[in-house]
Length: 204
Image (cartoon, rainbow, N blue to C red; front, side, top):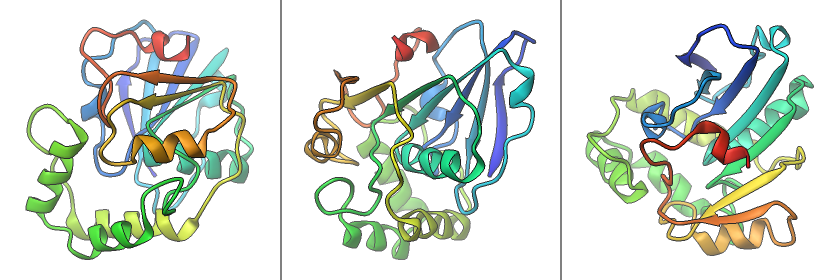
């Protein structure tokens, strides 16, 4: 996994962000707060994240395919986080009913180009130009996420489902999280974050 600090001021609280596939930090550019924020991405392999023990509280925000990847990561590493939030993702990455249809995931990977990725970003609702990506590496990562399969539920405290998600369909997310006590719906598409929102608001 790759790591990137979005904010680092030496506070005792850390927000650990598991980003979505290939989108990097772009969806979170307008979020604000006092916490240190560490983003991880690239789930071809799931590695330990050093330094977590140095914080009094670690809060996990797992977005899109970061949700299933974070769940696998928690089960694999036993990392200690105090709060867990999933946004616009499920525990079933390639699933016709509770995620993205497997054939759609495979086709996305096999036909991935700069142009098709730009179209994906527009469908997700990402503002601005598409991030620069390594096409081969992004393809490998997407296939690794799909091949890893469903993850055990790590006990998400809050689950946010966008009302108009065109990437992981809203109906699939609702089915995947049916009965979850912390379920909330948020207006917007697959990228529901807005400039000026506080990180802490997603844990409320």
